[in-house]
Image (tube, rainbow, N blue to C red; front, side):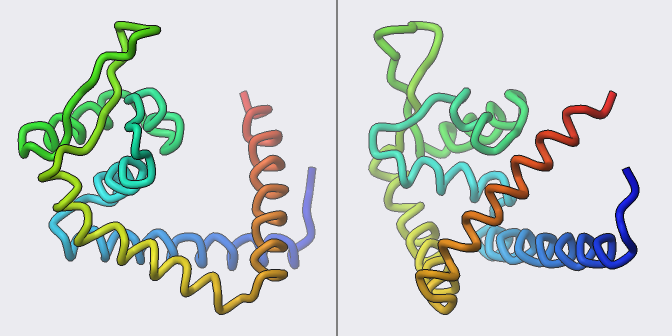
Length: 150
């Protein structure tokens, strides 16, 4: 299906903005000696007080198991995370912060979350809701059309 030149230009503008947003996270991660994916894993764990499984992290980040295993293993070797067995499925383990890990992440994740919240707050509630709604619609459309590609 062909789209107009105007739509294509707007898509390109949106993609550049998306890339700038990702670059903000990458620069922030680098300031703390982390990769972007490591920052995202810390963020997921920070907001999951009961921990989460590697599978949950993979799904959330759309990342492969090897990448997440490597990140979690690095954090484990530094004493930042521990594993708890999942009673219902002994093959899975919940990944949780240790006290050292929570202390380490406390200098990184709350500041990033505050920055995200402050940036969003500048939009106002109605525009935030509209942004979330439009992003959800766009995401569904992308899933629909990308998954059709053979």
